[in-house]
Image (cartoon, rainbow, N blue to C red; front, side):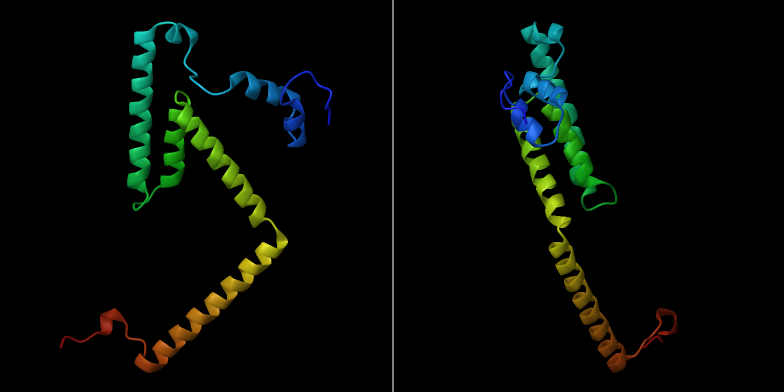
Length: 152
């Protein structure tokens, strides 16, 4: 780790396994609008750009929310809409950073051998309980196929 560097954040990024080039782009980019410079230079154009980005992001997020109960990749689409918003709005950038951090932490916890072993044991116990309950139900009521049910 190069602690004597004159670039801020380089040592922190190196500690996380990223390269120095990655840290420079992250530090330079920072928070804020990713709109082209000629759009940012004109206030009315920048405002209309932000409204457009908000509407497109909102449409994508709403589509993702609709996909939650329906077939489709709902959460992926919602995070895609958040990524669209994050190109222009600081609050969305902060939400995405927080989400990425939490997802990374959850993935690291899931790969822990003790957690995996616990999850396998709990899943096995759940499968056994469901099998026993299904066996008791079938023993008590039997198996009646829908096409053999007689009209009463």
